[in-house]
Image 1: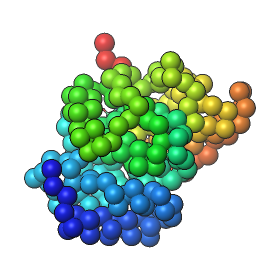
Image 2: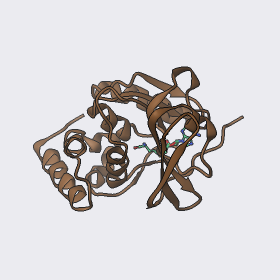
Image 3: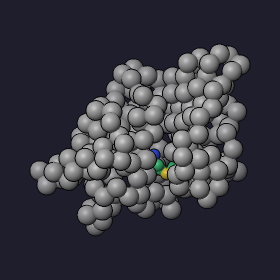
Length: 213
Ligand code: SAH
């Protein structure tokens, strides 16, 4: 696993591109400059790593576009020690960003191949979530709830109720909702019973998969 000054230069450029697209949170931009994204994709496609594009990884899944990862991280205003639940570990790139932002991260992946691969890979880079979970994101993680922030990184056909109920009061759920295209939707828990909802534009994620039997 190699990280060179060439890669660092490409990351610095990528952070400028993201800044020009509206990412202004310095901690998020700094995380983009720190994380060797080329190590998260197959080495023969290394050239693609620092373009602002999604890219295929194993099990017909994708590593999200850097802008999307940065947008979700900025919108959730991740603070040090925030207790964060991530649905859709995938390559672990978003997980690494959350960890660079010093959050305490619980991350769920429902495809065994990706779960295995990423739970071995991230610690090698020094990124250690509190827990990697092989399971179904629709259920959230009741035994660790409540969370400050919940981030969903796959397109959800509907908003899973358990995710809303696992937020702290004042907490936020950020979830792309829809079919082929999704609307990035933010829920802020105002009180035990009240949620404020904001729609933040169109995105395109791979679909959130129903639980396997
Ligand atoms: N954050 C990832 C994005 C990966 S794409 C990254 O930066 O690489 C979305 C991921 O969500 C895929 O890995 C997919 O397998 C996973 N996923 C889909 N449905 C899920 C579910 N019901 N529960 C948990 N993970 C799910």
